[in-house]
Length: 372
Image (cartoon, rainbow, N blue to C red; front, side, top):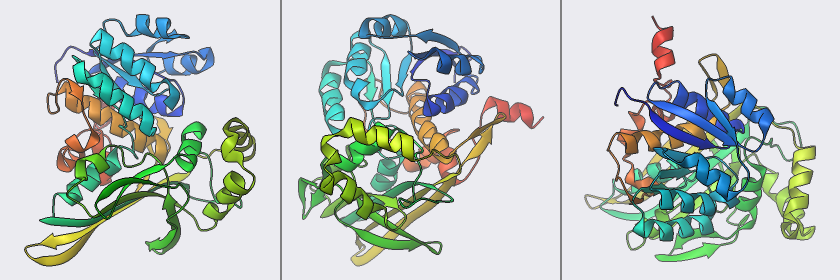
């Protein structure tokens, strides 16, 4: 990387925004301006050494991104299209964490004439899981089935849902309510959320999994014509899915998402004692033999420069920071739409941020100083 720091605008000063700011600021290669409408959150980020600015409407965002190298968007999903449009107009690279399929399709359309990179879905799922899935798919001469399972779970569940809030409540509800893209019998289609129920065990722990929206990113379109079946399911502890069906279907709270959000945030505690469970598997033919290969991993929280990051903070922030890094280093295309599967898995695992997915610590300037 150049010795000159690249100016980055980070939109969103929540928990994931904090982790992104910490990782980028401590790299030594980026100067970070954090923008949010919440002055209290900004004060916390200022403590990391970041410049801060309050924003409100699109005009204030447009002024904020002037002269930036890139925008990292950690705002709620419904802000993605507007911010991406501003970045495309300004010629500024754009990265986000959205799980919203409609927003991603709109950003793809914006990117057709863009002078800069527009790269949505850079977190965990969508994000890292798509990189893993594509890597598995490429290992087969003929790919049959690709299954991807991801869960952000409490390590010590204590309520009937056996779940705690660890990331965006709006994003969570989106995943539980919206149609889910998949490849079924070679055809690109949608399947209903909360269906496709299954159970499995990993390292002696029992889990359930079911369809949720957005986790595949652009991978179905990439693998269309190459795979028989491709799907994504969220992982939970047994019993969660049946309760969610009661809330969303029987009580019809899928039609009252604002109320459901209020209920969740008032009744389900957050936790930083979490674990990310990832189980991806692929089957197909190699050298004429039917084979299967799996990629299981668990990610835990870690301390970064004296700040404790939860597993969801670490795994989500690492994905988007690595995507930014690889564009800045010229490893990825420099304009237009870039899907997560453009990132090679080994390249990601060797990146200073992406290495956390291999169970290694971040390789930041602050770590190097601490080792001296």
